[in-house]
Length: 229
Image 1 (tube, rainbow, N blue to C red):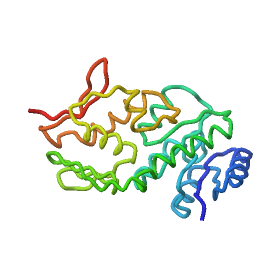
Image 2: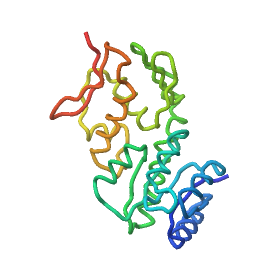
Image 3: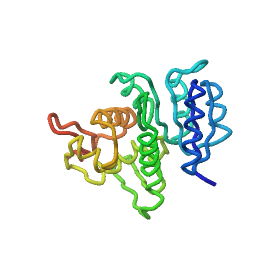
Image 4: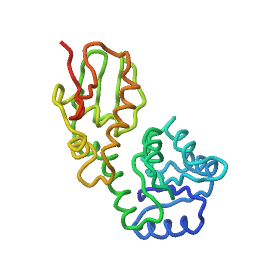
């Protein structure tokens, strides 16, 4: 069985074009033309990645992304006719993994799909069973599991990878560009705001967990996981 993609876009022509293109690339592709249908297909089809338009009838892409993230960490690439920073930041805050703006080149979209899938599945090949532990926190990259005060917490893969990297290199400061390179990979096509959004989401999850460490902003430089003395 090939990698399964779900395309959710109200433009039938775009759906047909993407289905033909990615099927020729060896993917299995399903398409949906509104948000309600898209969510139904997601539950039935269990795709490996979702290409999600923002402007959808019945339920827009924001709501679809939000509902997918309530129960799944599968990668989502959002497709939009808009290029505003607000759209990108909101999409990332809701848990999207990447963004592409219409009109797009199918080769670029294919490259983004492959890059996101590589990042999502990379842990399968690491053989790394090490668990990072500090006060009230355990981070397993192999299991993609975060435990806070002994309880498992749902977390998107990229947030966990970022937290794991910072915690594994505790007390070291990394710039946003360094984190993009180390965590997202050199082929990531986003920008440094991605790091800020993920740190914000992590802080919401980690608030009040411990007074012995902190996810700290080093103003003018970047971020670090600091062990407090």
